[in-house]
Length: 130
Image 1 (tube, rainbow, N blue to C red):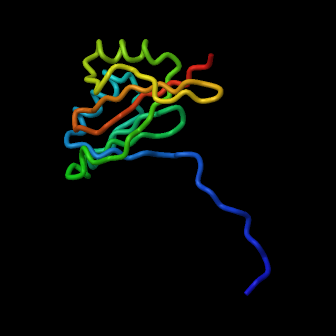
Image 2: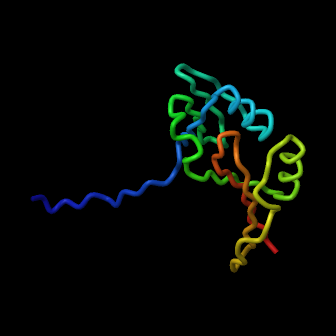
């Protein structure tokens, strides 16, 4: 056994998030046209990719049996109310109006939740400074 101690390892930056969907073309249209996300490319078998500020979002039609069971993705926005209005006008269906989640020492945390066409829960979050 060596006395050499490896530096502490920890995960940090997210490179890609996969979201299972039942219809990749419908999902691409929703994420691109309703949510306004920058579309990168599609690839077989049934994959669609978006740029989320340097993190890639992969819509995975091959994992259709897992649709609606994915993790919640939280998108950071500067103006939650304005983002809510724009997406609602484009047809996004929200679970609730933007609301205060927590009052923290240096900011208030606001969120609004919505679902994509496969029932995957998405969220928008905004850190509002006083």
